[in-house]
Amino acid sequence: MPVPSIDSLPVLADKLESSKRAAAYRAIDENIDFKTDKVIGIGSGSTVIYAAERLGQYLKDSEYSDLVSEFICIPTGFQSRRLILDNGLKLGSIEENSMIDVDFDGADEIDDDLNLIKGGGACLFQEKLVSTSSKKFIVVADYRKKAPKYLSTNWKSGIPIEIVPSAYVRVSDDLKKLGAKHVIVRQGGSAKAGPVVTDNNNFLIDADFGMLENPAQLHDKIKALVGVVETGLFIDNASKAYIGNADGTVNVFTK
Ligand SMILES: O=C(CO)[C@H](O)[C@H](O)COP(=O)(O)O
Image 1 (tube, protein in one colour):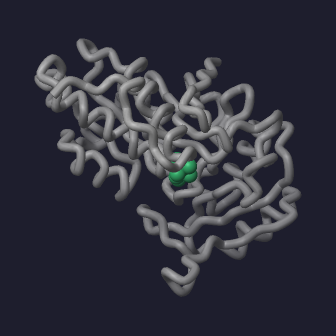
Image 2 (cartoon, protein in one colour):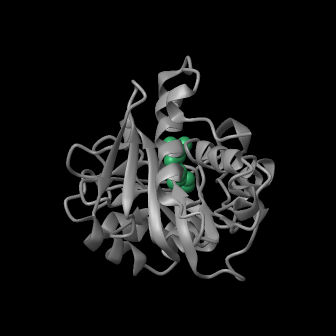
């Protein structure tokens, strides 16, 4: 079955979903070299669902199927493993494939320099492991994610930080000393009494530092705290961002 052209797709009733699908489909169409790429990163969240779906469409197209069936897809967590398997793609591990050709992932906020806040879906450590192991890291997102200037303008939940569970009091105190206005250990809400536990059996802290004029410097300071595994600030990592609009058009930002 040939890969459907983006223009021929039925319009989705939900404009936000349309924008995510348009961004992810175009990102896949324009950033995989089907002849030379072999190892593909598949991130987490609701937008990357459409990236895995598009790759699944290529798998069913006889012109591409032999090549795509040989692709090894590297997940960034439990949800992304399922996306790979549910779309018929070959699941691989980062232990066996430490060099990734191209990675597709979502973001919670994106600034003009393509610095990102990630971790809204609690997968930031594996997302960073995969994105920083990739020759190209392509961000797929909807129109709500572009910061007018500074990160933490639209994303108000704070910077997600993965921490070793026993260090949560110490790291919370240290983050306040670094200037965080509000620090919480992320809770499971009605789905779980107590903290969210990541795919790596760690906790997450969301730390609100207000708008970030120098995200690189803040990342370095947080990363240096004892107990911090990784921060959700992705600095100088993304190669391009595909941001879908409500009308189905897509803006592409390049570094
Ligand atoms: O960082 C993430 C998960 O840890 C996601 O990529 C981020 O939250 C974006 O998700 P969505 O595409 O659902 O907006």
